[in-house]
Length: 397
Image 1 (cartoon, helix red, strand yellow):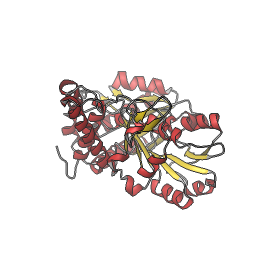
Image 2: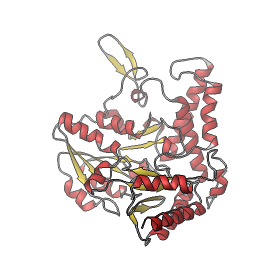
Image 3: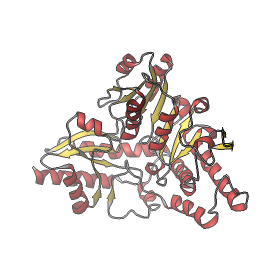
């Protein structure tokens, strides 16, 4: 399956065993998995279910070959070197690994945006409580980060800017190149949360020139329990070890230990081997479809949602970009709307605060309904969603 200029969602859907008459519109939380990824994961359990880095037998050697292949595939996927790819169980662990390994001190400042996922605010607030760092918030609005405000917030105590690339709240995209350009002039490091961008658009870390970047496998057709922390090699060499134990050391005595080389020193204990292999397969699948094709397809779907619901009475749009549509219906709770969409129309969405509690609290909004579409969703499904929301809004108002 190779697509040149156009994505064929109907053809793609045949690769996803769970797709049927129901409309799955919760991919910003969890993407579905294609048959190719599931089969690749099962290959590990059927054919070489052993340990990596410990066993010299044929199963162990085969597993290490597959892990190396997956690491290379993922590195190529984001334009990195293989040694710069660290496997984690999700982006939350990746961000925590970086946050706790940076060796920040009391008075150091970290700048984040006002639309960060809990995974990119709670680690910093924890360090604020424990060691006294300062967490500085930069506004985004509907069109992304305010670069002038960002510039004004940087001072000689600023150690890091940690920003979301694409918001899971409303699909808003931050100007990462602009952020990095400002940071470079000030000698400040940059970390990017790419959970909502890596599955949907081309990522080139060398072009972006960020110091760190994190993403999860489960949002990009990969298995749960998989994630990646990318770091420039020179920055990883400065990073302190966060989780230590087996596989993170070359040798140890009762008094001391010698750390492993990068990336092994950051990958403690037995890993999710089938998941890592499956994530490599997910990257291969996305590459075959073409990230530009995926981005164009999602834009079409997003246009259908926005154009269809922009002026509908009772529909309160919180934000909508690309394949993400976040809204409420006047007179109904977000959970009620989600349940009606599921039980009455066969449309699965997410309701709640979407792990951006601070933004909802600041805007005094209890929660919202979020529909998020991906490469396997069709234009017909987008139109069915629009029709369903219109009908619910009409009945409720």
